[in-house]
Image (cartoon, rainbow, N blue to C red; front, side, top):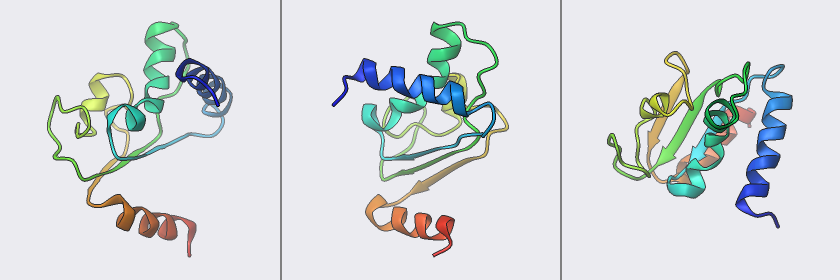
Length: 114
């Protein structure tokens, strides 16, 4: 069991080691702090630590049953993540508005070729 700080430190180390050679995407199920916390590793590295050459997330996909709107934390639209330094303007972004317990297994099956 790790604290939030320990978890973010581990994620930051892993991201910095992996992302430069293998672009990483972000697949978010739901919203709120639990859903959004890990995607913050990129702006943390850039803005808080001043790290250079840290790539943005390579793609973003979110499954949410929350109503999306600008300023809504749990239901923020993917383009709003650009202003927070999490995604780039040209990052492929997908928002699936549905029940994750139904949609996530279908998406995973398609991605894994089942």
